[in-house]
Amino acid sequence: MEGRVSYNAGRCASARLASMAIFICSLLSLSLALPIPITSAATSTASTSTVVAFDAPFLGAPPSASPAVVGVVASTDGKGYYVLRADGTVDAYGATNYGSLAAGSLPTGITATGIALDSATGGYWIVASNGGVQGFNAPFHGETLVPPRGWGQHPAAVAIAASPDGSGYYVLRANGAVYSYGVKGHGSLASHLFYRTIAPVVAVALAVDPMTGGYWIATSTGNVASFDAPNYGSPLADAHGKYGGVPVSSLAAATSGSGYYVLRANGEIDGYGATLHGSIAATNAMPVGGFASALSVNPTTGGYYVSIDVTPISGYLNPLRALTSLLPQEIDQGVDYCGSGPIYALGNGVVDNLYDPGWPSGVFISYRLTSGAAKGRYVFVAENVTPSVAIGQHVTATTVVGVLHDAKTCLETGWADPPASPEQAAGHVEYNGKNTTAYGLNFSALLQALGARPGLPQPFGPPGPLPSGWPTW
Image (cartoon, rainbow, N blue to C red; front, side, top):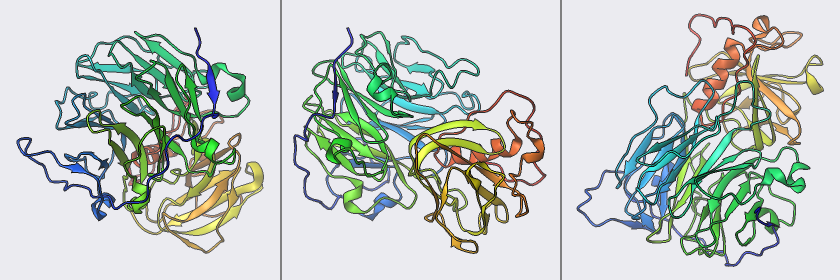
């Protein structure tokens, strides 16, 4: 039977704790024979770490390099944790490593998006954006793969959560649909008119209530819906329907079963019916361009781990990191995305153009990169975007070049030709109206390496060539 949904009717059941200094333990490897450090305060080392611990044992973290860090999950005994990268690599700290996805096994445009612990075996499951699930020392219960050319009807899988007893798992898709494998389903956002009238609904996280077996779903715009689980509140409810625009990226249940934590992209953590243990945002320790990507509660201490995606390449950072309701669309001349919020420059550059009537909405922002592997190349941000810069302005990876105001509309971004009239994407001579170009694939690969969800390759014709010496990622 489908569970009843609570639409943000709850109140935050716990007061926010005062800001505290958070100490992050050294990144040096520690002998497991030594006492395990429990962090409760942070230092500036948070700017270089991809995992931050709050009242939980810190044992190390992967380097700040591509591929992006997309997940973290505490081991069942609370003595360690696993970190997942976008290519399916799993790093274990204080816990047994049961394996990773084979190198290069994910199809083009597909990334690993979530990891969940099997409490029965101590192993784990990994889900990919195409809905594929693979178990490592954990039984396979099923998967629903996105069929070829089926992205519109079958949005990407964004999260996986295990049942408390280890009998199975749930897979969440970006439209709020939940698929149950080995366990009872409790409903989903996709089946409710309230959510289907908001376009698009982008679900980002799923957490199972250890007390009821139901679950909570969080959306990028700060909503939390409950299914056979009590609703304690949400960032959207706190804002009285006027959400502030910092994307929600993760959700985790408190070990006591009394509530949950909501993580935002800037590292802020809100506790609903659960005791706070600090946050990256409270210490102003988020690295420039960093994105708080996942949250996991330590079952022994009740503290938690936050993973940080900070993957600078040649000084470039993820330009889409602050967009909410972000939905990848097709790769053609560039990469199309629907969403809402600010778009940053890729890196250091100079703005050359803002408008061209030949593009939807008449906007074609282009800037020339002045540093990094693509120095001298041009980047464009076009279509339904309002420019925030001026021609001749010098920009950096922290400069907002434009704003996408409405999640119902889309932008296109990619490599541009040098300024001309009309303004053109670099791949326009390869584009037949339906195909993916080599320039679009290249730019999508760069965005993926920087931690953004890649675009969706199209099957209509060959992509064409890239010029000799074009940078690859």
